[in-house]
Amino acid sequence: MTTTDIRRVVLRAPRYVLGEIATDHSEIDGFAAFVESRRMVPDADMWGWGTVRRTELDTATLAVRAGRQTLEAAGVEPDGIDALVLCSTTFPSDVGEHGDLIASVLHGLGLGEVPVTGITLNRCATLLTGLQTAATMVEAGRHRTVLVITTDAVPDESARLADFALFSDGAAACLVSQRVDGAPESYEWVADAHAQDSALMLRGTEISADLARTANQRLCAEAGIRVEEIDGLLHTNIFLPIVLMKEVQAGFRPFQLDTSNITRVGHCFAADPLINLVDRQSAGGIQPGGLYLLASSVSGLRMCVLLRAV
Image (tube, rainbow, N blue to C red; front, side):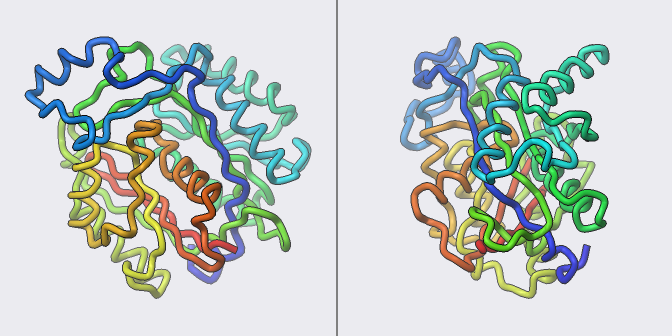
């Protein structure tokens, strides 16, 4: 999509929900053994260890809760939604359960029989893939207003600990639509970009600052800006030293990052960039006309979406 065309598209009313059970990192099952086995310095401030959020709900329920909040914030009735893009890093392994998931979300939101597109495989960049898919639908005139939701929860507590993050359960949602004059909490879609190297996608491979730098170059060329002009980088909430090192290597300045949610929320799968946008918005940190970059890096892939606050 060209920059001129994509400016017809806006992201509206981002919202999120977290698991209802707050747990200190030290109380995660197996945490002490995890730290010892990896010979990590047991310094919570250094790593950004804080609170994670657990849920006893299923991912469909989390998706419905986030979607309802977005519809309410946008002032849009369910019959104003033309399509649903449903994202998750892990859909049910039993194909027969896919219909159950879709039906639960559609019925829970009162959306009727709108078309549903499921997005996965891109791991914690899956939401940004879903946002780009929705923007393409709107830009092409196929749909006017698309509800995008990402929802995830760890399958068991052992999966809450990873070499790069502490995972939280939750969901996030927003609308991607044609521009609506006067709509609150709107962000003009300025540009998007990705950089990929399939040779780096193997399990255990680190995220790449080089791919982030390449994506930045493509994005900035499309938008006609310099990376220094971006007012805020809304990144994934992985361990603090990894975020700082990789994003500064990619060309960002430390003041463009806000790392507070690493400790407060943990890593909520693909939802982090949208969660961080919502919290910055709630704190009054969004400037009219400001540029904000949603970005996710996983091994072998960097995805990013540049927004301008309307």
